[in-house]
Image (cartoon, rainbow, N blue to C red; front, top):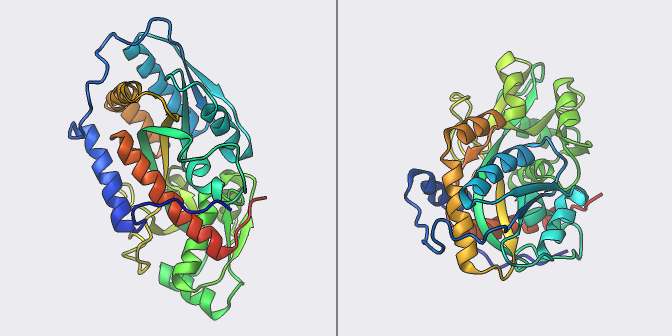
Length: 339
């Protein structure tokens, strides 16, 4: 198991501050150094944007749209290459070994960069030292949901039932080592409740069995859960974001529901290989932040359930270190292993 990296506090407050500071970029408040003037990107310098997941997922769809705009701004071509497998670590390893010249980027998520390294033993890359952070693309909140016929009306009801009969209530996730499982483990560790974890091969079958009430609850990505909550097929007990969701104004945050320091959002971000020159990283950061301001990108992100963030490379690095430290503690305390 990889040792936790030295990092800032991973509490909900500090994490909320990291994301809020980064998000100021979309309002024009985050500084961006004029490291490479417009038009100075070397002619013919084609960029490969590696997505470590299959085509069609939110990381792939948002990444393709941002990559297209970055390529246009730099006057070059950006090729999106899906290198899926091993919970995203195959693509990450490929980028970590690539030439540090800005021609190979990793458009990835929290899993390969902050969770998997603590589950999979020795990896062929260092998730922190092996990369230069470029920019946060956005975050995805989750919703703690139960089936419509479940008796639980609040998080307190769920916890009371679990404590009264430890190990009886089950929660679903998209698989061992996923952010969905991590949230269930974190809930146990913060409250002393005990649940059964039922891993599925993907978020969709996990959500289907939650709808069918084969399990009692799950932490589901907001975009996937919202239609079922709005139709009445699922009941939302709380959201894992720092603030209530606009789409669910009556649903409390986990803190409001009585579980302190429980802010969990799955982030998507862009990294370059370690030792990529700072002027190159800063120019890429500048163009990614600009792409995130495009109304078409904002509309797409809304459909995907992603809150666009942006920000500086350092803000991404701080967020990665904070989350890596938090999930290392949760994995160690829960004795969690990958498949």
